[in-house]
Structure formats: structure tokens, C-alpha cells
Length: 119
Figure (cartoon, rainbow, N blue to C red):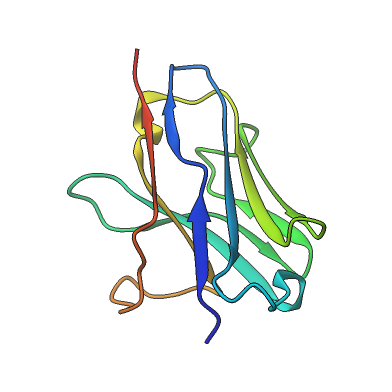
């Protein structure tokens, strides 16, 4: 199974923007060969929730982020990025990316990348 690594988290004010990146842990692997890349997030005390997917080049979004978040692939950087605009307090969470859709009890959740939105 391909393992992906997240980066780019940080702090933003409400209304601000952050871009997260997801890349293969083994750099010789091409993220373009992965059919579906998914971004999840987990807020404190909550389960993981699916935020966005890029599947065979087509994006899909959780309704609450549609119009604010954009998932895209950058072949030059070998990443799938999640551009987050119009951030809200409720977007505060640890964000994870996976190769494919995974269940909540998936044993391979990595450390993720923390996104904190606050004033």
C-alpha cells in the first residue's frame, strides 16, 4: 500500500487561507499513479471525516467545504494539494491524506498536519 505524507498545516485567522500538500513517503513513487487521493480531517474528540477526494482526476468535496477548498494535483511537485480559503473556526483539525478511501478504524493513520483557525 502506498503511504502518503502530509505537510503545510499551521495557523490562520478566520477568513484566511492555507495550502496543504500530500506526497508519497517514497519519493520515487508518482502520486499521479494513485487513482484516488483523499483528504480527511479529525477535530478534537471527533471521528475522521472525509473532506475532499481527487478520483481519476475528478474532485469531490464535503458540502461544508465546497466552494472554499480546492483539491488538485501538481505533477511537478509530485503532490496532491488542498487549497483552503475562507477558513472558519470549525475547520480546525488534524488533516490527513490517504491513497484511496479508508475506514475509520484504518490502522495506518499517520501524524497528519495540524490546521488551527482562530483570531
